[in-house]
Image (cartoon, rainbow, N blue to C red; front, side, top):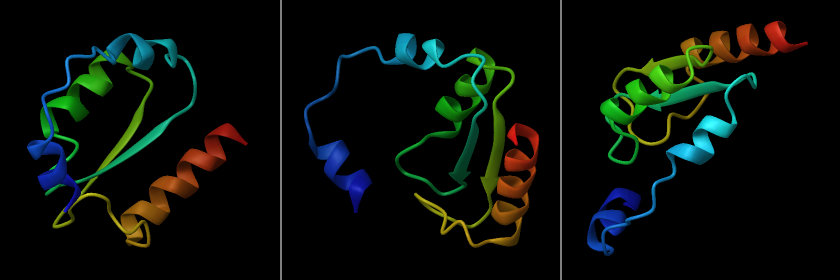
Length: 85
């Protein structure tokens, strides 16, 4: 599993938030699996706090990454594309 490999690797010290902040104002949709062991709920919340225009969806009962064929994913993707098209 990807999460196991990341946890076994040496701790990263890089602060990637400045890179995230550069994307502010760009249309974005972030989809997180509720059971993700890669993208924590806290990081997902901070992503929204740092970029209030970010569209977010958390998919119940899914790990990292959702299959994107879930009805709620398809609806969110359709909504996102309609907004930017």
